[in-house]
Amino acid sequence: MVTIADVARHAGVSSSTVSYVLSGKRAISEETRRRVRTSVRELGYHPHAGARSLAARRSHIIGLMVPLRTDVYVPVMMEIAIAVTTTARQHGYDVLLITNDEGADGVRRIAASGLADGLVLMDVELDDERLPVLRDLGGQAALIGLADDVRGLSCVDHDFAAAGALCADHLADLGHREVAFVGYSSGVYHRHAGYAERTLAGFRVRAGERGLRFVHRTCEGTYESTAGTLARVLADRPGTTGFVVQNEGAIGPLLSLLRTSGRTVPEDVSVVALCQDQLAEQFAPRLTAVTGSAHELGRVAVEQIVGRLTAVRDGGRPADDRVLLTPVLTVRESTGPAPSPGPARG
Image 1: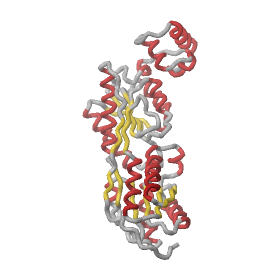
Image 2: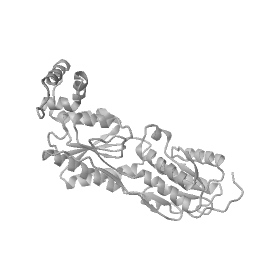
Image 3: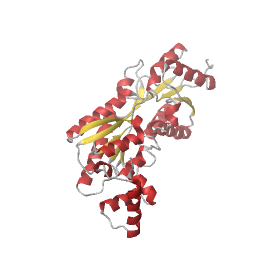
Image 4: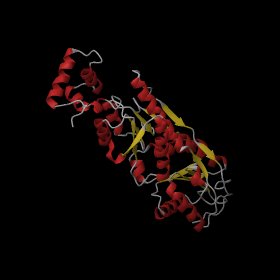
């Protein structure tokens, strides 16, 4: 299917210029009009009502692109999806679920079909390939996540850099100096997932400011991978007394492995998790955790997309809204003062 972006490349103009030529909404030079029309004819482009813009006609449906990956924490994704659905209904919209394995092609498909008035995208990567497609198609979208380039879009996310800094500050305040950061699998970082990279970056900066010596280790989240991660940490840094865990799957195995190695939490080692309160309360000891509301992410994203659609319907220009939710540190039983220096244990 030939798109506006294809016509724009062929004519050597921007996608918005092609749209203006086709719609007649702005004055365009005759030379540019001629080039665009020639490209339209040669490529066989046929404008579709839905492809012109996701907001060109109202279906009263919002598309929600959800992650279909093994390395995401499903309960949080479900909480966000439920919040999107319930908030959308309050505004008179239904929700169409799309899996993000379709990527940019999925965005084009929804745009061409005219099924949805706008899109909410989850699991946003820093250089997400879906975003240029949205701009080319002129669609209205809200991101649950923060990309490097969010021009022409609205987005909401937790302030993951601040969350990482909170973890570093808490352990530093307790006197810890050797710390390990247990992150997600290597694939999460390779695809530049914003929540992983921003948390680590925030932790790294604050750790440097507070004089913490730390190592970052990736982890698949299984018992076996967590055992390997812990063994590498203790082999490299036997004096480690603080752990920050962002991979929710690794929390239970890590606590079990620490007990097996004869290390008591929090007397010998402290553990801070980046997870929801419900999960933090399930463990013994209950976890000190940095968290943010998954429900609020879904609610704000829907408010943003509804605001953009309303602005377009009223003939205005949508505001590119950016919201970062402030993380909260809740201190529980898994963190305590750093132990006095003693013989290192293997």
